[in-house]
Length: 129
Ligand SMILES: [Zn+2]
Image 1 (cartoon, rainbow, N blue to C red):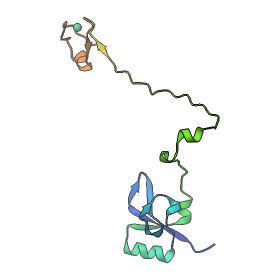
Image 2: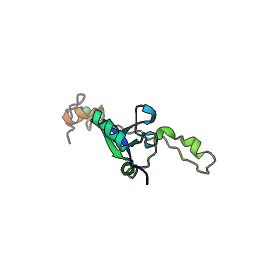
Image 3: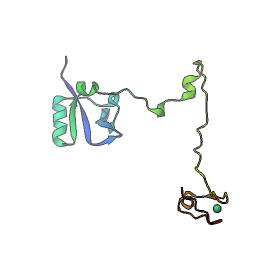
């Protein structure tokens, strides 16, 4: 076992729920641990001492708590399924039917407000249920 190493979190913000860490070669911050810089104890402590919002976390602790996830920006369904044998049934998303109200008296279409707050402007029927 070597010397314990640390990631430095910028605790001032998050991307979604993801913590931000200092990236390698001073390239700003990253949520991607593979791109995060690892610091020795002395480096991590020194960085924290000059910027209290930079919080050192033991790499081992953080690495045990990553979650595998798939970023939809990096996948293409057509590309992935080409030649895979899967045939997708593509259906258009169903349009949500707008609820319509008709006057019981004359059959005219009414807005929900007119229906519930009637009487009907055309025939005067009270449509309130
Ligand atoms: Zn009516």
